[in-house]
Length: 344
Image 1: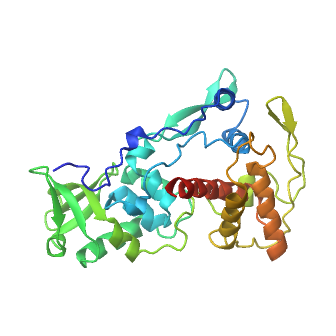
Image 2: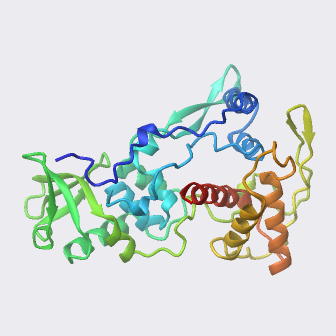
Image 3: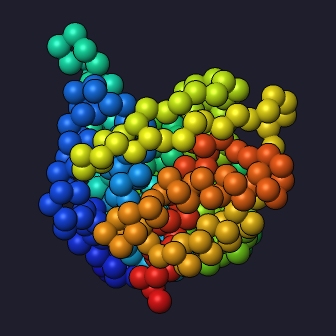
């Protein structure tokens, strides 16, 4: 049986990075990448400049396939990502055909100065999921996710399938058979189904789980929440209570002076409705004004949307999140808007 039977047939090898066909913008993007490599810009600085220019993320391609919740089945890495973060973005991150097109920056010495080297994320594995879970905000720990998942399989609530070790053929694992099996993740982070009574006997590998059952059983009220911490002012890299001017950015020979960073009052951080009110306002503004295109409207830039949403928060709740947190979510809203527009 074709080992790709459990997906929808979308060939993610054809996914491009949505690079601009505009030579000037492409040159701008390549200059940013080179500036990060030589240490003249940090990765975060470069991402912000790319976003202000209306470009996609430098490190991840635009998701141009079907929604991950429309897949017929998920790998164990994708399944655990859903249980741990409850996020479609997290599931995408651990879908190997997409993941291998993404990279992260690694700090490296550069002749006495500090620079960054782009490193591919590589194929997904349970070990990668476990490592990410140990360093980010989760709704369920990695170990609890593994236990919860197999409990549901043994209860017949979630359907699992896997490749047999002997014949290397996919087989659906019944609830009755699952009682004789144990989900085992070895020291290298690889997942297997082993004999529950003979732990050294591996019976199955390359596990898959029914997507609809997973999503129904572990419903998320925040299906697009990013992996990063939701609203941590420390992520700004600056004291959140000190007002300071942000350096100007050169853009095609023009300097765009960024606004003064807003001041967040001291005290307990507020929780913001990222997936309801703020999301609805962002999509409404994008629908009203259209996608970012300086040739159509040189004023309508991501920075303007960020400002508008911060103003919306201030008027609605008399407080607002940090600019860094809003920037992360605006990236998400913009991606969702583009996907909705492409679908419609």
